[in-house]
Length: 275
Length: 303
Image (cartoon, rainbow over all chains, first blue to last red; front, side):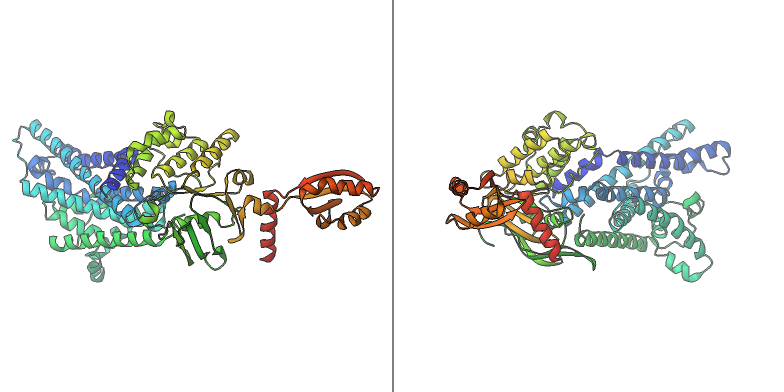
């Protein structure tokens, strides 16, 4: 199994799209978590407190990007990792090697799980550098968040990206390709969840449904790590104004989503013919 | 499973939807150490059969054993190398890295990669991206991938696709060499000459059914004689009365004579002595192509 995972890591490492997604994600996180707020602070200190962009607030400042654009980019990673295999025909090449289909599936998932670690670490490292640079420029002491909060932030970030990646995997396996899977994924992330979330405040029945949405639970999880609900509500196209659920429920629902997405994917991969 | 059989299928069928019966009750038996040519026209069910043998496609009914194990199981796949249709590799990886990925999956030592690249003539281009390869080079890499596991059974589907004549000849020699010893090769093709030159035994599939099987010699049948003579009716009467002749029939403006080819001189002498002019006398044998066309045509008519 280890060698199978190493094989998949080689593929992911040498694939340009992996690095492009990592680059876009890091850049977006840097721009929306630090550049825009700091420029706003410089122009209007009353509107944007400096404390938000200092190292102590690193976790709270970065986590807001995970449930939305981080998630969409992770979805693309999942889609590309599985969907491209159909387009290139490489799935059948892998399936006729020694391990069975489920081991190939597991190797790909484990490689994705490993690949998501730098997706979280890079963003935190860049955030730490950016916030430290701002602190130095403003002549403020550099004080990092507690190790416990940092670890919780890293773990929550990884989980949120992992759930979106799993959704991408399922959509790619279901549609046996990339284009439709990315389309459906973005439609779901932007339109379906967004519209129903907007309706939630007006219709109580919808409110109950939205509580079990991917984004609602991801946002709920990050609000337990210092992300202000007001910031989430003003998060551009990914804005979310509730309902929020408790951290424990959010964790459970996200884990359940990941499990369901992967079970469905595994079942489809095992059952279907490979052309 | 019979010890001598590497592939054994019973009543193997694959149906797609209500209308398409791609493989229909196939009984295939490939013996250890032979090069088995799997012939059939396009759409006959060759590739679907091979996919079922590799576990890529689930049969609708029937059973199959590959090296004594269920197709697609690690016990079977670990001993089978295969090239199915167009070779499929990661276009952004080099040929060498593609083999590295497969070696890791197959549990094969990566030290095998260089000798295999050398063997298929890709050592110089091993570091280039697969996406830049010509079709012939892609086929070679496909063969290299199939050989990584040092398989007991090689399943090759149209391995000379896209190759120039020199490449095809080289590949034929290569496959023949691979088939020496205890390694078994199942070679699917629609190129008669290719199969005729390489295969020990041949199976002809048409409409999803096995319509003929045997050695090339068996399929082509016995050698016969063909003569052009004047007057033909008199010649037919003389020949039919000869003891060495088993059967005579009119074909293509002449007579086809089922007889020991060694009797040709005697038949000629008898005709000349009877005052018949013999314009042409030749040995005749059905080509594999002709047999193939007859078998597939008979199946179409039966369907």
